[in-house]
Image (cartoon, rainbow, N blue to C red; front, top):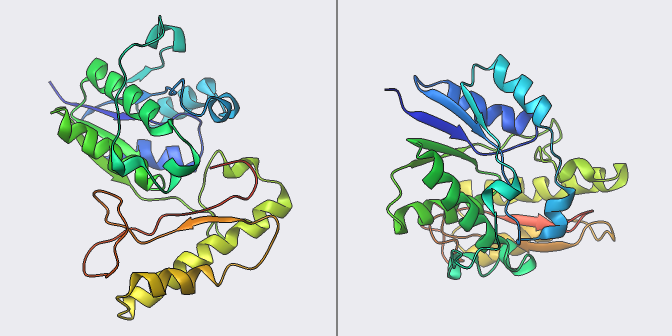
Length: 249
């Protein structure tokens, strides 16, 4: 029997489209999963768009075999007494501004992987810290699923395609592109041979203009496996960054 390849995200937009297409490029049965993580950033979850009808139409066009879309009540018939505790990998970056978020993410992802038991599961690289946590979750709990990262989809001006970015006002949206330009600046410095992580991040952050609509929360160079900051760039690294422009992302 062919394997099952779930694409984990809801809300039909180009980023989800890329995730489903990545899964659909393989000779597998395809399953599209939608779900949230109650208890983790409840306000953010409440604002998250739910577009199951649009998702279903998209999946039908792309040849997805099954959509798994359980309700919150089905996934959590009672308040859970056991949840996944996430260690230092979740302590900083996004985790610093969204306490408890990754505990909820890890718990719901583990539940979904246990229910569906896929061969491969696809997660966007835009959420780099989440991707690292899911990979560690699968390794630590011996889950028989291969986690595949899907490259970030961007608008023509470089802003990442995101349901949260879609909530930005026109003014916030225009300001937010400065973050992508800062990441490009850091990338060029690294490609040119820069090895001092602190110098690179400081220079990149300085390219972001002083703007009340754009508050830089973090811009760091970290190890892609444990998401801990590195002082010297000597191998693969990730540059996670977030600006508080509009709703938290």
